[in-house]
Each structure stands twice: as structure tokens, then as C-alpha cells.
Length: 450
Image (cartoon, rainbow, N blue to C red; front, side, top):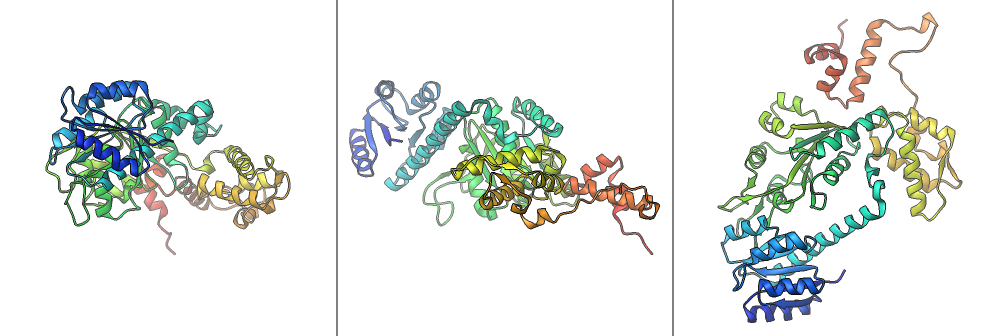
């Protein structure tokens, strides 16, 4: 992509300086002295990003942002504001600006903001290209023909029509982020950004800065103001993965942001509104975490407005084979070979295995098998050892031999263990499936005495 930048400023020395210095950084720069002149140039030529001052004669930068939002939403705008003019920055974000930069600023900071805006534009264009190329095939992240997946797709469609918070739960590897992206893509603003953050991957102080942003000078390395992810997700979706790992000190700050729909950057004195949909995800039982005092109850209720439970792979029947064939074709095509099929023995092993790592584990297993295969079908011996050697452990033994039958208590214990395995240890969901309360379930889990 070209790096075409339009500088909009009624200060001629500033225009000339930016045009010269950005030109040395391999940007293709044009300039306009007013909002009206900028609109004329935007209508006559292609630009990848706009940098505009706010206060100008003959129309403000806010008006230009509004015009871009209505007529050229694919062109991100960076607004230059006077030092400390947070109100103007907020107005610019509301008008559709991608980012803002307070004066005075270093050229390196502007270059950084430009590079980030260009990456954002490239992402939007790639999403648009894929949507046009794939059409209905863009639903592949929810691939599956089983009843649980049919229910999941229907629920995703209903949830996408709302802007309320969504809590996606399920075991590790089931594809919670893919469900979140499907909700975003089917929602009211699929062209908006999808911003994802793993709450378990960052230290507390860094995560707070990432989420809420910070003011210039807020801490030692804060040499410039930074827009947080809440604001970066404006017009789109903010995905908070591993929400259960959020520290106790950050939980009330997140709750307030969700309730007030605004955030206060670290070191800032003013609150910045945001307009983004919130989707959170976790592989833990949040209700149990609330009971244990590890997660705020009010935050749980605020996030759990629209709950979605993603089924584990072992509950999806022959979807295992459908996904395996999909991954086999994908890796064969990447390697430039012919599509690979599945041998009967390999299919049986795949169906018998419980897939504790879910779709992610299946994908890794098929990638390994495809790399080892030297024929047109994946064989059982191509699969990892843990899959080849697994033996099915049914809850009830299918036999007519009285010598091998077991007491009812043992059958019950096995079934309880199987339900807990299927729900990834979610005791609230397991109790609901078993038709008992949590106290009864805990009692059944206690080891029997001698």
C-alpha cells in the first residue's frame, strides 16, 4: 500500500515543515490549507491517512473528521490538538478520528501514529477483501454440522443484533475468540475495529495502561499520551480474553468503565468516552470464582448479560472428522500438495479420543500428521502417540457378563466424572446437567470412607 498522507493546517510553515520532514521518511505527502480544500483533494485523489489541525480558518478539523466518517470511513484521521485540550480530543474521537496527538510533539511520535493508522487501514482493506472473496465461506470459524454447533450459530446470530456485553465461556482451545469475531462480523458495525487483549498475558500495571491509556508524564516512560484499547475499539468490538485473570484492583475500574461508558487515562484528569461493544471470555467457572471471593459479583453480572457457552469438541460428534478434513486440506494446500483424506483407522482414532485440548489440539495433531504423511490419506500411525494409544472409557460398561458389571454407586461416580470432564470442571453447569444443586454435587465428589 502507498503511504499517501494529506496534511491539513492553515499554518503554512507547519504544512511545509511536515511535508518536507515526512517526505524524508518515505511518505507521499500533500497539503491543504483548509477543511474545504482538503475535501476537494480527498474527492479527487486517493489518500491513506489524514493529519489535521483542529483550529483552522474556514472550518475545523472536527468537521473534517465528520465528513471523513460519513464519506470516506476507510481513511483514518489523526487530529493535532493544543496541549492539554482534552475536550477537543474527545470531540474528535466522537467525530470519528482514529487518533489524536497533542502539541508540541516530536516527529517520531507523529511517524509512529501514522504507521499505526496505516496498519489499521491495511487491516480494514484485508477484511473487506476476504469478505468479498470468501462470501459465505467466512463462517468457517464456526464450522460444524452437529446440533451443538447449530445452536451456537443461531445464538451468535441473535446475540450479534444487540450491543449488550457478551460473556463467552468454554474450555481452552474451543475457539472463544473465533466466536467473538463471528459476533463482531455479524453485528451492526462489522467494518469497525476488532481489538483483542489477553488479560492474563500482561502485568497489572501494563494492562491498566493498555486498557485505559495514559497521559503524557503519567509515569517515567510516558513521553507522550497514549489512547487506551477501550477508545481504540471505538465503532467496533473490544475482546477481553481470560477475564477471570483480571486482578482485584482492576476489576472495579473495569466495572466503572462498563457502567459509565468512559475511561480515565492514567495520570489524566478528564474522562474519555468510548463507543465499543464488550465481549469477555474465560475458561474458568466465574460463578465459582465469585463464590470464592476471587471475582466481583457485580462485575460478573455486568459481563454476563448475554452468555454463550462454546461446546467442547468431544460433545460435537462427527464434527471432529469435518474439522480434521478441513485442516488436512488446508495444510496440504499450504505445502503445495494434493488434498489429503482420512483413512478409516485414523477416523476411528480421532472419534475415540476425548480432545482435552479441543479444536486447537486437533489442528496441531492434523498439522503434524500432514507433515509426516507420504500418501494421499492420513493414516492412524501418522497421528500423535497419545491419540493412537487412547482407549475409550465409557461411563456404563456394555456387557452381559454379570462378573464384569459394577455397582450403581460406581456407575454414578463415573457419570459424574464424565459430566465434569465434558464441562471442563464447571461445577455450576455440571450440577445443572445432573439435576442436582451444587452442595449435592460436592457431596458426591467427596471420597467415600472405609
